[in-house]
Image 1 (cartoon, rainbow, N blue to C red):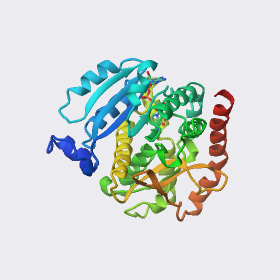
Image 2: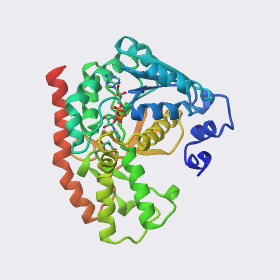
Image 3: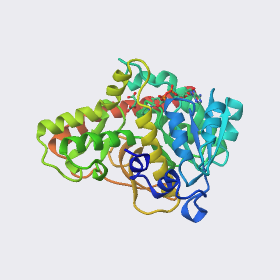
Image 4: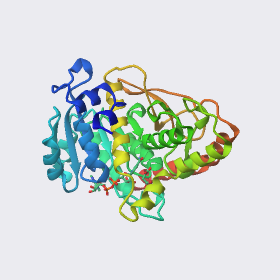
Length: 348
Ligand SMILES: NC(=O)C1=CN([C@@H]2O[C@H](COP(=O)(O)OP(=O)(O)OC[C@H]3O[C@@H](n4cnc5c(N)ncnc54)[C@H](O)[C@@H]3O)[C@@H](O)[C@H]2O)C=CC1
Ligand SMILES: O=C([O-])CC(=O)C(=O)O
């Protein structure tokens, strides 16, 4: 498959940049001129994600920040003949400059899983990393959108919210947990089973981003296909275990990086399109949400706009099968949220 074909589903901004059909930056009216930072840019996700953001014609500057390794990655990416400038920043003392003036900050910093671990096992290390980075965002770019990739997302998003609240700059419209990879997987697995063209598939995925908190709603998938209950059960469980499938296949060498960079670039692109005032930009995302009483953060489809999250969509109709997963996930999701909130209150 050609690169051009592979990118045929991306937004016009990303597509024109990839195809080389346009070598100038998108004008401000088209949503160009954006500064995007990737925190954790020298990592498995961060390198590819930084490259994909450099290929987005809405972006003028990509800021690559990490505790080590960013000068090399930035030098490498900077040779790509797209308009955005790529700059490397390394270490605490350069973090503020990396973030100043940013419209969008994407955070894939922190440790990944090894076989046998849950995402929650990463909490001990990643909670502190995320809290420190978000505190720096609060000071350097308080109006930027934040896309949180670092795991456990079910807790790192509430951690980020609490830090931003303590800094007096929290805006729930601007903090988005990235669950796009769950949607990417659900679409891929569904298309293969249903025998439909994957580019035409849509599947909402609700809840959170860990095990049973990931709930693909195949009853709402389009185009619809007459799948058996056994098929739906297998697709649901495969989507919930998609991350573990990759962790086991990588056998100690980390978790999903390339598919995550793709998913992160799609989500980042959608946020930039929303900022530019484009209409009907809809992605599933884990955000502060009123949709499920008693569960303050929840992923459903959200509409992206000039301020970030413009509208949070309801779950819609679920089958009895989906409803039973929905009920089962709630205690785990609530516990992960409470753990994130408590971490900030006890340590900061
Ligand atoms: N939301 C999602 O769907 C997914 C989330 N993830 C998560 O993304 C995170 C990163 O995964 P990988 O890129 O594979 O890991 P990696 O280990 O390859 O890269 C992580 C990078 O973060 C950097 N880092 C550590 N502390 C930092 C700090 N204080 N400031 C800036 N950078 C720092 C490291 O130096 C490293 O370069 C993990 O927590 C992983 O679980 C992974 C896949 C999917
Ligand atoms: O499974 C992991 O640890 C990484 C991740 O979140 C994913 O691939 O969905």
